Every structure is written in structure tokens, then in C-alpha cells.
Amino acid sequence: MTFVPDKARPDPGRGTFASFSYLSQDSTVRLLKSGKPSPVRLTPVAWRTRYVARSDSRTDPKDRVITPELLTSLSGSGIARFLSARKLGSPRLDVTRNTAVVQVQELDAALETPRVKQHVWSINWRVETDPGKPDDYVGYEAWGLFRKIDGVLRPLYLAAREAWSTGENSDYFYLLATGDLDGDGIDEMIAREMVFEGEQDYVQLWAWEHGRPVVICKIP
Image (cartoon, rainbow, N blue to C red; front, side):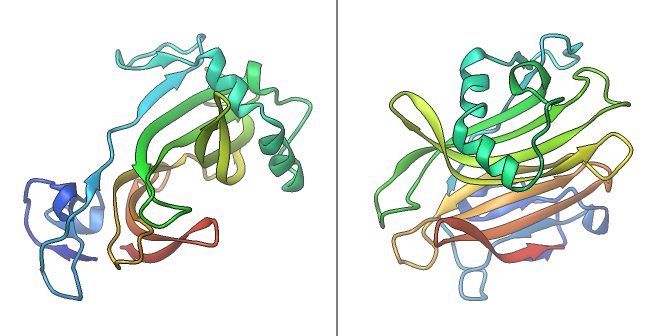
């Protein structure tokens, strides 16, 4: 991956992505094949849908209210064990009452079996003590890839960290495109990490190894 000093129209299917980094305001991020500007074929991932708490002012008209189905999925025992092992769970934080925002993307990708596509959900969510009061909260942020099993979303991979209103927070991962770049039948992923407080943007190339994403390249 590399910066290219132009303002070309983003084309995720061909490996061209918008850059929002202050280091490269007049550049795009390009994915190169074998180190050369050869054509790259990827499948773009649809933009995320943002769900907020019912108490939220919903300044964005596209926002939706968090659904009971999402809350049921995010309250699952597998996620609860994961959070407890990382000491992120708390009696003050109940998913059904304290989820502030959920951001969802859907995609098809071959991650577990070569060349066998699965429907996958990418979900970012934040649970906090006072949803709707962004200046005074503690909680955690989490991201995961999910599959639907018996009608319920089950985690395929999870990551999480503590979050609080006075500290570093609000890192969100957006998937931009997927595709088998090395011919092994398992899809790689292009992701964007948005660091809210740092007003920074990182475009990353991920490989899927041993049940988890591994960063191969990160810009800047």
C-alpha cells in the first residue's frame, strides 16, 4: 500500500481508497500488486449502518434506533466471557440499558474455508454508563466479526478496550473491501481505522490467520 499524490476518485474494487489523513490531504491510498501498479480486483464492502440509543438526539437522519435483536446478540455469553476475561465487564454496564452506539456492516468473505464465502457482519459498539451524555461516561468499545448461527449473531472474532470520556477513545474499524490477493482462497481485507480524538486515519491491509485478522500493512 502506498500514498499517491492525487485526488483520484476512490475505487475500492480496484484498490484505490480515499485518505483522510492530515499527512496526505491531497493523496489517495493505493493497493499495489507485487509492488507494481497492476490492476487489483476486490469486492467493495457496503457502508456501515449506525444505530444509536433511543435517548440520543439523532442529529444524523440516517441513524437508526438500536434494535432488540442487536442487543440480544451483543449480550451473548461468548461476548460476556470475553469481556470478563479482559476485566471490561462491570455491574454498572448492562448491554440492554447502556449501549450507546452500534455500527454494522455486512459482507461476504472466505475466512474459514478456502473459496467458500460466508455472510459476515462487522460490528463496532460502545457500552457506557450514561448513553446520550458524551462528556461524562466510562465503559468499553468493542469490535467483532460475526456469523449468524440458528438465527443469532455469534462472534467469529472479538476485540475490545476500555473507553472513557476524558481519555483516548472512539477508534472505529470500517471494512472497505475484501478479496483473495495471494491466491490461497482466503480473503484479505482492507480496513480503515478512524481515530476520533487523534483526528487521524489509518488504512490497513489485513490477512486472516488462525481465526483472527493480522495487519500486513498500515498507512500512515
